[in-house]
Length: 504
Image (cartoon, rainbow, N blue to C red; front, side, top):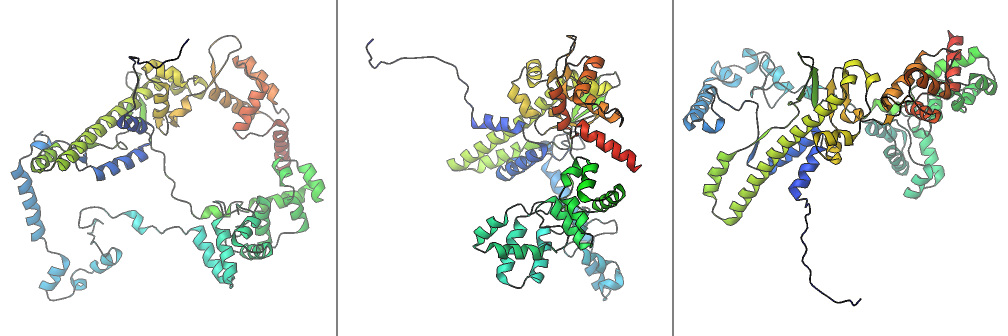
């Protein structure tokens, strides 16, 4: 067959992702915090966008675009006239030819609290807004600043202070040193002995236990401060893995003490702080805000609604667009305004489509997990993205994006939407499949109910699940679920329960 160039015409269909379509897809997976940040950035860039302040109608039921210009002016003039009639404290005091403190004794104290704006007796400022409580809350000190102030007093040599600065920079949130000393020595071109000497000096800083390289060293530093680091305690700290396994018998043999001594040493260790750095640099705990609310309805069905408090609401100011367009003369200005109008229309449409998609996916999740909402986690059904996508006629990737970083508030608690998507475990009798999360819950129930004399092994748990609920699960699957819930093995649990009985 001879090879020769030729021309061919083909007709085919393809999907092209435009920048706006890609941005719309990206909006689906944003959380409400990220979405508000994105909208705020668009409000700064686009003069045709403005936030909706709740009410969109005036007292006569007319939209804001139809308010008469005279009404706006009269309202403005009324505000200005009223502001001119109300005199401030300085003007009144000048009229009486005296100081402000003599007329308004509380005014001086208020001005000291907020020198830039005066507060009335209700705590409101001149603008009518309540003062921000964050302005009166003391800031928590940072761990790095707290340690740097101490090292500057402890160390006199500039080179040692430089080493200490690098040691501080390499502390993690718990206050542990996260890098090797040799790495810092190589980076600074210093001797390893100098780095070790600086480390030993700064390990006495407050809080005691910082700059440790392991849990044992952190506890040892705190015990040394209390003058309780004796040879027996050192031996105990060197064998913390036996303590984690609750192998008290082997620990007593290595340490060389009886059960009463080991109990006293463990009581002292419990009083220590294994993460001394957590008292610093900790930002405020932010509560998870649900995106969707699920409530029982009067007819027995579930009512699903979006949390409108966290959704940004924007409007396109077409009146302003029409006014500015008339004054635009150059093609560049007209093109800019057209792009702004197109972007504004796209954003409002995308936000509305995002809200509808979220409510659609949430409604299908609630429909399929009705048993969980009614009876609890034992009735959680196995569910996949494909099952939801096929029902609502969407792509799996769309469902995945919608359920990312979205939370749903139910009578059973607050859950991430991803929580309801679990794998299926087959039933031994060929019946309804079981959710993996429901199986984990049942495993935890069995372990919590076991006695010290009858600790269940993984094989026994698998047999109980198959006998009682027809759940066909292997021993290694039980072990994987147990380890995922941070539950120790049957050997360690037996030691824990026996040690607890002996203590009691």
